[in-house]
Length: 202
Image 1 (cartoon, rainbow, N blue to C red):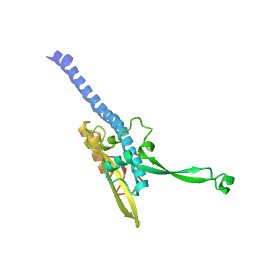
Image 2 (image 1 turned 90 degrees about the vertical axis):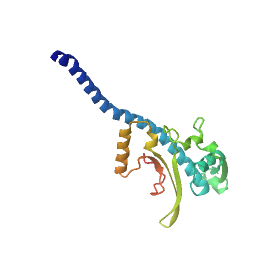
Image 3 (image 1 turned 180 degrees about the vertical axis):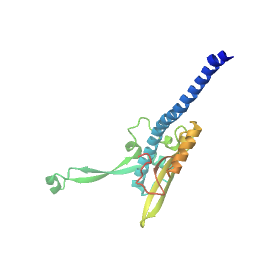
Image 4 (image 1 turned 30 degrees about the vertical axis):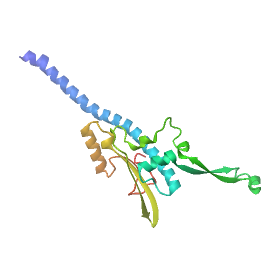
């Protein structure tokens, strides 16, 4: 019986404990690696939303109130750019009034995000890895120091972005962020605290 305990049961217990120890160390590492990969995709999405929202505001003086209006702006909207003909540094050209500026209208879809192969604005609607959870987007106009200021924000909560990952580590992450007064997820812009459309990862 002592030999059985010494040569079989005890080594098995040591192996089991070693396995549990390695697992307890590796689980957070695995979680953080997967979190970083998912966050990278979500940040790209939020940056794209910000790019289109800023362009929308330049045209309409307020931010798009819904994802439908933002996507329609990308698909069908136009934006005006100012093109300068000649150089203001050329004093002869300036004196002869050869330097001028022209307004040119361009399709949004031909101007913004056109460096991305097969960019589809419909992807802006959905949080990656979430099985269809929508991106939370809001816009508003608030009075700041007596001035009407258009604001927008787009939110991707960790509960959606990290869906299917270790539940307890996700709970811990959300608690830590909330305890620090930070949004438990990724966010660009803010309708509560104007931040020049900064992302909370920046």
